[in-house]
Amino acid sequence: GALRELRALSHADPPELLSLSEENAQLARLDQEVVEEAVELSAAYRSLETEANEVHRQAEDLQRERETLLDRFREVQDSEARACDEAAAASRDLDNEEHMIRDVARSLSAAIEERSRRVGECEARARSAEEELVEHEAGSTAHKAEAVAAARAYAVAMERRRQRDGELAEKLQALR
Image 1 (cartoon, helix red, strand yellow):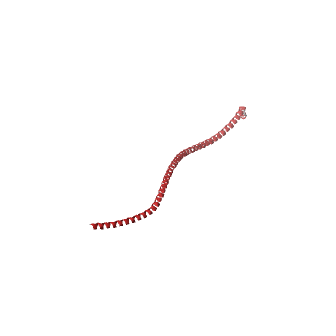
Image 2 (cartoon, helix red, strand yellow):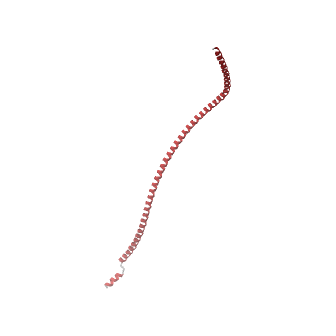
Image 3 (cartoon, one colour):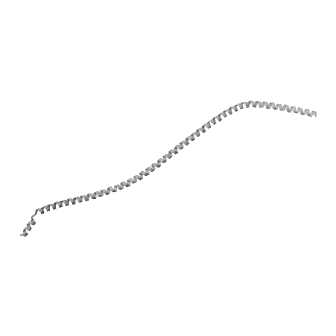
């Protein structure tokens, strides 16, 4: 009998056993859910870790690109500063050149005016000399005629004087 009772008890589910069995089943389901959630969380963690690594890599790439752009920006600023300096120097050179050209133009204008004045004076003197020459030539023709007449008169007077000197010499000779 006692064995039967034990067997009967072992085959019979006592209320505590049923309760424990249900609790065990709930815990098994809960354990399964926790395992599934852990697997999901692990997969999500790996995905997030991969994404974080990718974001970190992109951030490093962006940082390198930023540094490259900053270097290029500094180069452009330096180039702009040099260009501004060169433009200012060129502008000063142009201003100096313009002042020099104005000075040369004023000097040339003054020289041209002076030469024009001299040319005018020379032309006036040339006209005056030409007028004098015309007058002189007109007077010279008259003077030539006078000179020829005077030369003839002188030659005649010299001839007369020679004759008279000859006559006086003969008379002086005769007196001696």
